Length: 147
Image (spheres, rainbow, N blue to C red):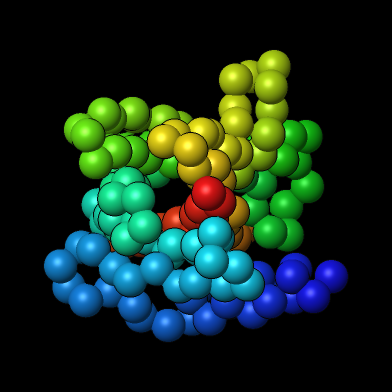
């Protein structure tokens, strides 16, 4: 329970604070364990894990069909995020992570790359039922990395 509360605290801290240095690469926030990292990235941003040299880049949000708050939907919907993973040796993998684990549709919340489990924790902002804005949404993707 304590680990969950610590994780939630740091997740909210990341969402509420601007942590980009303007270069498209941000600093990761460590939580709870030396083997765990939580990253908050926008589309086009990347982070290199200092211990392994693995680069994690959020390419784009492919889909956000999640049921908006205040609406009753038949299906909860899903958010899909395309990430690019690059190892120090140059090996690259393009993966799609989902906000929901739906095996029959091929949706997975996590992947394994270079001995790291990379998991999509949250895709923000969550859709709302209000009139949509004409401005494009700037998504913030929270990814946890476990070695």
